[in-house]
Image (cartoon, rainbow, N blue to C red):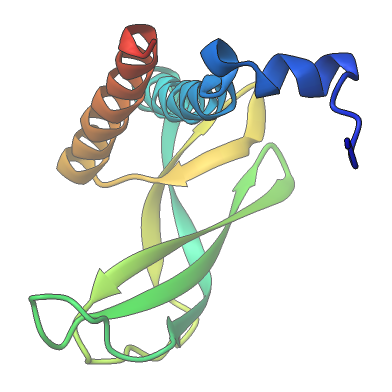
Amino acid sequence: MKIYNFDILPFRFYMEAKNKNNLGKWFILSVGILFTLYSIFLSVLVLYGTETNAKITSYRQQLGERNETIPNQYTYLYSYEFNYKGKTYSGNGQKIGSPVFLKNNGNSFIAIKFLPDFPQLNTAYQEKKTITNILITIVIGLGLMFITTKME
């Protein structure tokens, strides 16, 4: 006696033995593509972006101490604004730092890069750290896409 009717085409496709892992495969492939696109976006910003200084508008600690091997590490969230062609653009980011909490006194600045044609796309820029982030995300993205090609 059948209680559920799995003869509907999408359900029948996923219920067949050879297609059971396709959903996971597509999910892993999608995550790999997102990592790769993010690293391409960061690469374009680093290569073709304009560097400027942005004023930090807010700086606050998020939650408590991080539960990692290095003690006394905290996550800080910050927001910044910069002017380009008479308009003000904003962005935000996060930083892992020591327990010393810095008060925002209105004259703190951070280096950023943005695309001149589309200044809404911007990121905080620290040369070695940003390049390391690009390399890590491209390796993860391409690795996930490679894994999905080897899945049966």
